[in-house]
Image (cartoon, rainbow, N blue to C red):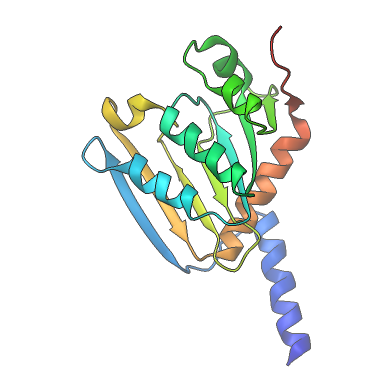
Length: 181
């Protein structure tokens, strides 16, 4: 029985890396802005983090989300960020400098025309991970001005592993952020 379970788990791990289907598991919260409070739901997910938050952001200018990530870090949650270099350096409202100064390690994605992911993997290596993704940029406009969608998926370790593996693949190709002088 143990050997059969090990084989099934190994096959599942291979399917994750090969882009294969994953088991449907856990819950999905779906929000649409400007009608739903996507930012509030995202802030609650960040506040519930216990171990880690891995962020991939195309653009990052939401003060509320930035503050919540800083607070998570203060309470011992490991927070790391990947972001699109052009958006981080050209957007006058970017909070990358602020997050870096708060101790969040940041890397710039430079390989792609646009590093357009909008993802948070919260407690990704636990039995109850949370994946946040959708069109929702981590900005004020995403909640107040734009038509966006946000999915918060809880309780699917195989899905979290796929997202975390992808985050790490991108991290290997990224360059460390250095604060402008």
